[in-house]
Image 1 (spheres, rainbow, N blue to C red):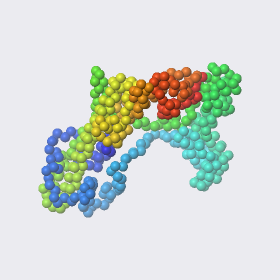
Image 2: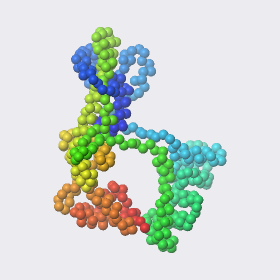
Image 3: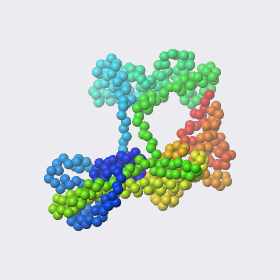
Image 4: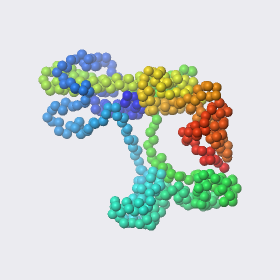
Length: 464
């Protein structure tokens, strides 16, 4: 079950880890059908038996005298076999904080000022904002660095940081962030000056898109106001993230399944990287045969170790094969269930489908289907998608036909995309449009679907 939930890249890493801890497992094609015959034929009556009937990896050095510093003693394995492992990804490169610190090093500051400014940089969040009160930072610096400072001094040092790149870092709120960027524009045109006035004096109206109030206060026409708004929208509300985006190591999505349409027939295959060829080491099989012939105690102890490694390798290979079978079996059921969609790519052809529907088809537990759906991608002629995106609840139309909630969301998206941006559709109007199409859905449900699609309310979609 743990192997089943791993996506392709994680599976490759898991196989490498298993090969590192089990020398009896090798990558390659096994052409010898009798590789594992010794495990089935040999009888080890004198071998120690684990009372709990559980396999435990151990080294021959467990029984030897020269076991000081053995690697198995340097690590504690106190996690449950069913516990989900969550590896923490990391990226390399110059971070946002490092970039600011390098710019700080070029300023003419004494050691004391440098340490205070460094503390300010450390308090910036990922967006590049200073969210904390200066009074709290004054106390922190006094406590952690034994440096006495004041809010006035912090303000002066913060102004230095606000001159750094990217423009807008060190701001305490969005308004200050935008003003910093506007004031750093070299050519201060009339548009820039009006944009500065809007941000400085009418930020509330701007955020609520009350453009009529802004044009009235500025006494300008809508065409000019549109240019002013566009100038503001060109600014970066998250200067810290702008640099982080350039430094991030994005995880590449590798499809677990590949689906092709061959003359109206859907063909499904597992990504070949999913299950590399593995085999049991012939050298270890020979070692087991040699140790089993000897009668002395050390050879019997060594044979226990080798036998366990061979059994572990065989078990792991079987588990990988079982994983591949389960994945293909499950994905094939999904493909058949949503055949109309996979043939056309039309989202309105998606049928309502829940985990239970597929679980009943393949006769597997719902939790197994969930493990497959939540972490696996399929490459189709229309793009690469996460399997769980094909699952949705059902709704009944006025005619009694059951349709997927995803179909309704698609219609919502199309309606909003085609709306007049000067008068965007409210949730009430969207509800009426869907009712006219035969979908009897409450306004609160429309609002929920719109939020799930990350589409703002009508007022915030308004454009000049």
